[in-house]
Length: 560
Image (cartoon, rainbow, N blue to C red; front, side, top):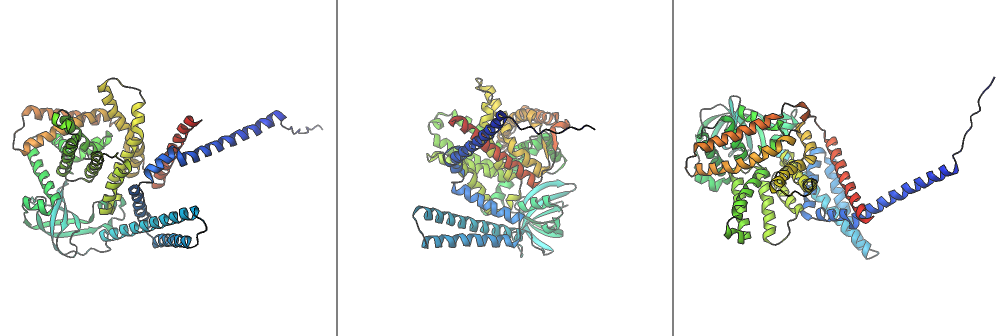
């Protein structure tokens, strides 16, 4: 019988030395990257970003408020508030003890200041958390007892939903005075915004009954609505427009927008053209069949942002007016006067469009930017972002639940990060026209990296059709918005509009209709997937780590 004896061979000396050398080189390379990261965090590019964002008091306060609101939303248990109280109190007591029993000069002072900062941050986070919980408790009472007849003011029309008309009303009497309700009714009366109504309430549903519909419940909370139901009008008391100007200025401008809508209806445009033009200029899209069709088309075309009056529309208006002012010699020599005129026009547009929150945010950011320019100071992006966001969150904590708020600020941040690299990726462009067109497309592309995951999280859907539709539709919208605003101005002055102008508007809207539908039927351009919150946080964490790695790689090329 034969058998084979296994022979255990030892690696050669050369291979052993190569392995030792490669491990040593990998260890040295890793140590060099760690040293590079430390250097960048202390005095390199990461230190520059840290000092710009985290050393801003307003931006740091915004992060604390967001942390408090998020903790109240995700962890409503009482032990979290108790832990924040203990943490803040402990840090404050340790800072006092450190001041009493100090054994050095530099280290105790630094440690004491950090303990005080940690104590203040914990207590501010606790205050934000309690403020959010109290607001939510006010909007979602366990029971909502209303009288059979209530006095209310009409705040907003929602258009028609099936055979009913939707209204947002605010109660002005009773124990629930100041509460906002969303009601649906069938009536032959047509009250104007700001009119006082005596309503008979039926089938009220408080927000607690929408626990099986968390998305709709969050939407109603973000709008400040405490209940929905049906109603019928018992009596109508009209309110004079001049009285609204001093008592409810926002309702005065909403009524003025309603008057403009009546003038637009007299132009006899097609239903699609009227809905589109009113939507992109005045921010009003009814909930009828034409409005639903318009939203569906633009969502499938990847350009739904064109329908929501926001910073884009304000930028188009301000840009058009700025272009006109740049050709006026008197304004060109007085730059500050031009900035004041642009701010006045921006806020007028914001008021006429109904003070929509995205437009108010954009106008506030523009005011901060031009305010810094007029004072001769450089505009700081952290402060421009943080101050309007803080005002919105403190006035309406439930606005954190709306999709428009994170979409707006992440869009600004994404443009700040990606617009310049994308625009410069093709090299120098000599033609001014091609440069402008490429700039519009680069702006559209720069928004997507941060907004695509958020869209999948909120809506479970996103469209890649914007790659083909964004440029032509953005150009058409940029022409239609100022043109139709001029038409509205002429209508407000009582002047008539020539038929060729109306024909041109019809042609432009039909062109937008064809472009929006051109790629909606291609299934590979439509993404149907709903991200969970952990998946969304993981994507953004990997995104941040990727940006840090890119910064370190660029810094390594400069230093090594």
